[in-house]
Length: 158
Length: 287
Image 1 (cartoon, rainbow over the protein chains, first blue to last red):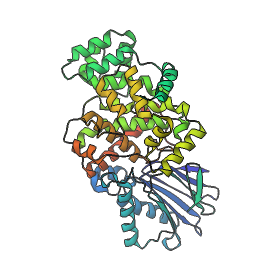
Image 2: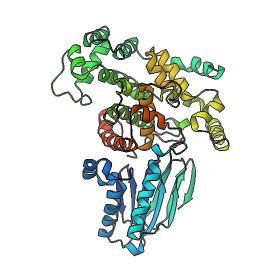
Image 3: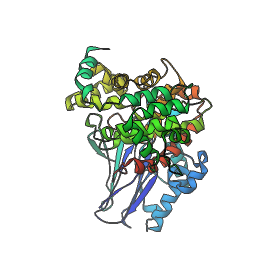
Image 4: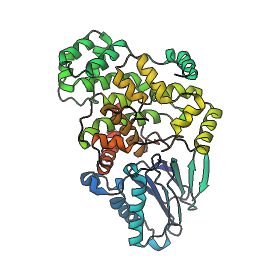
């Protein structure tokens, strides 16, 4: 079954034939996690670095922000049987608008916020494809753990 | 204007859904700071179909009016002229902008979703800036990419590949590559369409220069430029272009928008977009 993850949302799946996909990652980040032993995988599509810009929005939807969404995403994966030590983590997106002026560099700010969080939690990124100015679609096949990207008619593994 | 744009526009513009003259007049009177609610109501009442539409739309879920609105004048007073213009233009272009736009790598509803996201951003922008944003910004942002609809028909696979190749080899943003290959771009074509619709000059200019706000800066143009950037930042209508467009930080600072304000605006737009999509009858992404 195919699960589509929208903006500021996440999905976990545990079926062998399940494929999770998130479309149109621009400056947003897509984070794919997979525990082969538990057979659990998930994708999180996050839009903004920090909940401080809109605490009330973070209350209704913590998945809008890296700092509130990433811990929740991992907790839900652990509740579904995944273990931190076994997780394969891949990251994609974080594109820049145009020449990447600081004002619009939400993609970069997203990525920095994520790296900071991962560094503190001791999470290692196994594969990543971030930056540039393309739109990416991120896939995860739960049965095999294969994670891949699609953009402008090309496809490559992550 | 180059010869390419003349050819394209002459051949295609008649095929585009026309904008009734009354809507153009409405855009003119709404954009005029001296016009009263009475002036606006009069323009609407001259056109029976527009009157019926305004009343129907004013009472629909989209306007979120608490009590039934029974006269045009009441609709203008309660909703404001800018809101009525949004309803009228939105109703007019929703159908044509909902289709696929293969030349830009946009599937069904993607251009429309991008347009609605930009329109919402233009409207909500007011909360995060120090300079007043003109009320017609919503309408301008809603149709800022109307030129893509028309150019799309000239973008077969070979042309798209050429544009992509030029963008890559010469490090051009998409709109420049488009101009290099076609001799025109969707912003210029959009401006021609808006003139053809007899939209007032500031609206035409905001559409024509939405990728180039620093040439003749003004609040409406800056609002549309930022709105387009926000629609991209929230991931709506990326298509082949992706994020390969120039965004002007000067546009933001002229309006008094900060980087934090920009992020807050993105949060507001993505939340409100979900509600708006249902009202406009768009399918959810990927559904």
